[in-house]
Structures are given as structure tokens and as C-alpha cells.
Image (cartoon, one colour):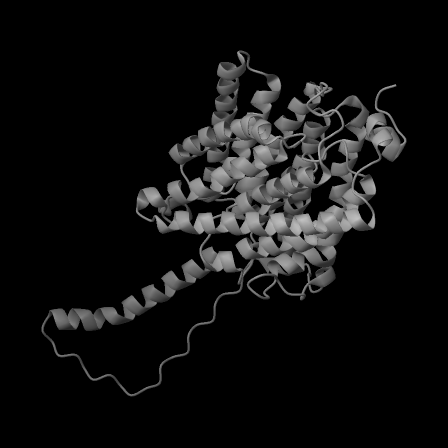
Length: 452
């Protein structure tokens, strides 16, 4: 829609200049301009109706499938390989069940709350159960049904990311209740703040191309709150809890890397030059962060680990997400390096220093790298790419807007997530019984085992 408005504005200016040119020429030649006839001004031309673009639609169908690939099987395998073998199926089940649950909730109310006009804090109820979503409805040059489903995949992966923070200890029933409430009460409002027409951060000009605040800071902070409310796993810090199968984790990280091109380049909502730049900077930042984590770990622990380089790659994907439609290659390199080093510190030094059990580093990777990427977007934004200049192009105020968005997201997510968790703990209980935790979630929650 923004491109359409820009084109229309440019067309109207051109018409005005064309009409004014005889008068300008006459004045330059010294001729007195004739008196304007007393006629009423013509009515403004109506804006042309949006038309479907087959190429953009084809790309967005592909991007939507790529983002869904990020959760199932990407994130499911990434997390599933890092837990102990008694919790593998339970971890995979969480991602799969969240995919199904959030799809229905997004259809029922989430999309309407996030992307229809309402108040500055939350959208309206105009599209509950996707009412009015016909085959001819468009968002820009793509069907609104495609845009809705694309955004649905974002809403799916965000709560799935949270599960890494409380892995191996939450009841499956409590997890379903928590995720359902969280998507409607936390994710949808913040999505409206940042991306929705009339959202208060949207109106202030926050830059978040594909979800630095909406997805990653949101999920990371919620994960930290969940880890703190549930407490540590039994034996945490006293007995080894190594990943049971890093092959699965690397496969999952690789699928995340590939799927992320749909996440970032797809957020252009078009197959155009901005989507191409978003893809390029995503690749650069991810590679930089993977190497940054690897070398930091090599220097610190004397050996570069497979888990480390995979985690670093994910951190780079996270850090570039808010910036991907606003920065160039040099900015992407800097953001990737900062995101990889910051997440390495968050997943190792910070967690050890504060002593919380963020099982699979949901906050360490997504929260920390998300904050770094969101703030640095305001530093490295290039006007020629995304229409907004950053600090390096003489607009320091953009950094302040980014900090406002980060602070508001952290504060609201922390408080709302804490309240939801505490209420659920009072009503149904959050954590599995001690004997069930020792037995493992696979058997205690699902009656199955991945290995005999």
C-alpha cells in the first residue's frame, strides 16, 4: 500500500507541474499571466483500485511455506536435538501442537486483533473468524488470504520459540493454555502496535521489518519469565544434561536458515529489489554471527562446538530480522557480528551469572540478539533502501524510537506473561510432578518413547 500511495502522490505532483509549466514559462519571458477564469477546481482523481500481481502472489505463497517450514520441522528439530532423549517427543509435540492451535486462534480472533483498525493498543473485531475475507480481497497486490496466512506463520513460530526456555518441565495441558492465551493477549496486541494501521509504535515510525520486537524480543522475554516462574530443572547445575542428538539440531538450524529467507525477504510483500536486498543482508548477517560465536567460543573454551556455530547462525538470523528491509550489506555485517557475540554472552555468561535455567537459550539467543538487532536498525538504516535514515545518515532520533519500542515490548511482555503464568499455576498448575520430570515428558505426558 505504501508503494501505491507513493506512486499516486508522484503522479498528482507531475500533473500539477505540467499544468503550471505554461504559467512559469510566461513569467520567465516577462509576459503578464492572464487572469484565471472563475471556475471551480476539478475533483481529485480517485485512487486506482489495487490490482493482483501474479508474480508477487507466487513469491508470497512460497515465502509463507518457507516460514511454516521454520517451525515444523525446523524449530522442532533444532530444539528436539538439544533436550535429553527422554524428552524428545514431548519437545517435538510442543512445536507441532502450537502450529495447529495458533492456526485456529489466528483465524478466530488473532488476525483481527492484530491487523484491523481499532485503538492504538489493539485492533478491532471486524474480521473475527475471518469474516469478509473473500477471494477478491487484496492487501497491496497480493490476496489478503495470503497475507493473513503469511502473518499466521509468524504468530505460530513466536510462541514455539518460547518453549525452549521451559523445556523438559511444563505440563502439556498447561503449555496449551499458556500459548493460547499468550498469542491473543500478548502477541496480537504487540503485532498491532508495530505493524497495524493506527498502532502507536507504527505511528511513531518504529522500524521492524520482520519481527525483531514482535517475534524475537517478545518470545525471548516471555521465555525468560517462564523459566523464572517454573524454576530450574531437577538436577540443573548438579548433573550433566547434554543434548541427546546434535545431528537433529544442525538439521533444524539449517532449515531455519533456509526458511528465514521467507521470513525476511517475504516481508517485502512483493518480489522486488527490496526483497532481494533483504535476502542478501540476511545471508551476510547470519554467516557473520555464526563465525563470531564460533571464534568467541574457540577463544573462551579452546574448541569450536557444533552447537555453538548453529546457535550463532540462529542469533544472526534473529539480529538481522528487524533490519533486513532497512540496511545494506555493511550494516548487515556489523549487526551479524554484534548479534553473534551478544547472544554468545547471553547464552553463557549472563545465564551463568544470574543462575536462571533457560533450557535451550530462548532468551539468550532470541531476546539478546533481538534487542541488539532492533537498536542497531536505528543506527544502520539507509534511506535509499527503506525510506528512513538511521543514526549514521544523520537521524539519531530513530535510535530513540527503536529504544522506545524495545522498552515497551520488554515491559508489557514481562508483566503480561508473568500474570498469565501465575494465574494458570493457581488454576491448573504449570509444572509436571517430580517423578514425571525424572521419568521424562515423552512417557509421562504422551505415553511414548522415541528410543526403546
